[in-house]
Structures are given as structure tokens and as C-alpha cells.
Image (cartoon, rainbow, N blue to C red; front, side, top):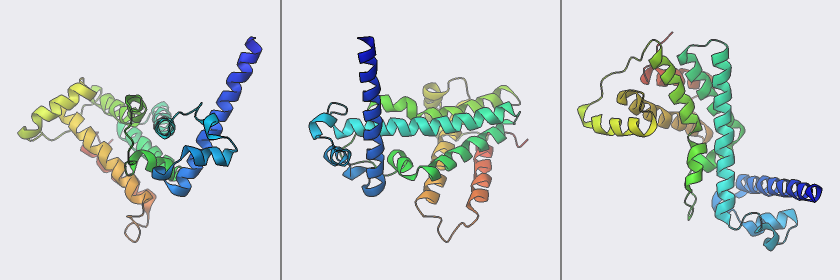
Length: 232
């Protein structure tokens, strides 16, 4: 009986992967807003009722794709930081390595990046189980800043008084062991990192930035400075 159960589980894993692969192809061709379970089933030679046993709704399929994308992106940033740390890199260089990994992943997976950082999908609201995967890149950046804070310290300008309560709230939510000014700077840097990648990926740098890899590395270094990381 266990052999039969194992075969069924393997078959389910394979069909689930095939459904998600086809859904990604349709994302690339038509965009997330036009994703249809019926169209995915048709391309796979399945009846719609069979596909619904794997993903009961379009939103559940979208959620699975979003979680996969965030996990893949987060793993890329984590692996880059781990390699830099193993090589003895300073926090600033670890930060740049993680940022470059985000850019490289986005360039290699443009449609998946657009799914998680592009325009919202009409009618879709991401559930709470996307939050953990979505936080992985941010957690890498927090970890780098934490290492610097616990080592040589951070060089941060003071926050305007009006932002003090907001920065304290963000610190309590995201990294209570870091100064509120550092957490506010991290949130800003995370948003700017996404903006840099999105501008390149979606064509806003066309005719503006030619040496894009070098430009990005420099900009990532400026973000490192903005969160208080020492230059060396």
C-alpha cells in the first residue's frame, strides 16, 4: 500500500510542477491578469475539473507561483550573501553581492519578477502565507546591517523628529535589535533596490544608462552608504 501511495504522491508532484510550468509560460505570453485555469488545462491536455483538484481557483495558482518566485529570489540573495561571508567580505561587499543577486535573478526571470514586483493583478489579494517568502531578501539585508552594527557600528544621519515614532514602529516590527534610524534606512533602501531593478527590467533606462551592470553596482554601494555601512 505504501508503494502505491508513494507513486501517487510522486505523480501529484509531477502534475503540480507541470501545471505551474505551463502557468509560467502563460504569464510570459499574456501576463498575470489573463491567467486562466481553463487555458492551462487545455495546453496540458487536461479537463478543467482535473486541474481544479490541484488548484481550486486561479488565485490559488497565482499564490503558488508568487511563493515560488519569492522563494527563488530569496534563495539567490541568501546564497550570494553566504558566499560573500565565507570569503570574508565586509558588510558593504556582502550588501552589494546580495543586491547584485537580486538583479541577476530578475534579469533571468523577468516575468516572475513582474508577478511579484509589477502591477497588482486585478481581483487578486495575496494571502498571509506569501509574507514569509516575500521577506527573505529583506531579511538578508537586515542581517548584513545587523552584522555591521554589532561590529564596527553604523554611520547614520539623525532622523527628522517627525519620523521618530514611525521609525520606532518599523524597528519593533522588523528588527527590534537595530536602531530605528537604521530600520527606516533599510526600508527606504529595499524600495530603492526594487526601483533600480524595475527601471532596468521594464525599459526605463533605455537611452539613459548604457553600462547597466556597473551603474547598478555603484548604486548598490550608495544604498549601502545610506544604511550606514562602513566603506571598508
